[in-house]
Image (cartoon, rainbow, N blue to C red):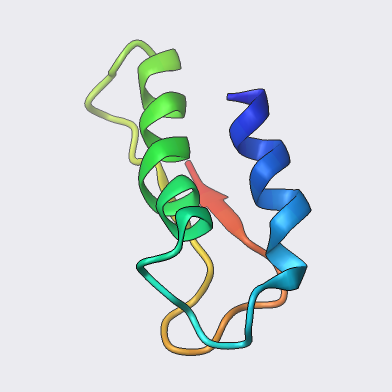
Length: 66
């Protein structure tokens, strides 16, 4: 999980201002990191974990919702 956070934080600023859902960083933020966090929460169904970098235009900061 630490590696995922590092990859996202190190690469985020170098992305274009448009969200590219085919990029590795997008996949790490939106799919892989939330999955890892969910697994570490013992897969408790009452938790929702979601990552995003925006829709269309990239947000200033990537985020993960618990």
